[in-house]
Length: 130
Image (cartoon, rainbow, N blue to C red; front, side, top):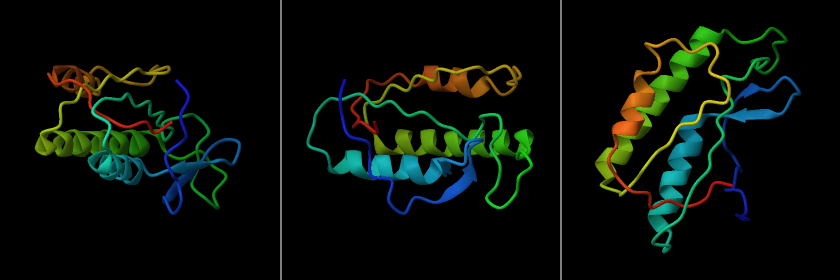
């Protein structure tokens, strides 16, 4: 599937990757996606979103030390939970699939969100992020 990336202009950068690349705030990205899809006339589409805040080597701008994983994981799951709540409120027909890249550091208690994602019995009607 070939598509353009969603506009990233003015999205807040919360972290920098190990290579110095920007890591955008998930809440801001997902809220922009939700706004864009509400205006989209396409009846069906698929979205792929690669979230980066949990990647090793991420650090806060101006700090060389790797950001605390526990704090990043908590923020990530809190934001994901809030986003799922917004999706449910929207009444959209949605299916969310979470595919962990590594998940070596995820504990079973954190995976309750993955079970929650799978339990959303809706079909996808989304727009591409890229």
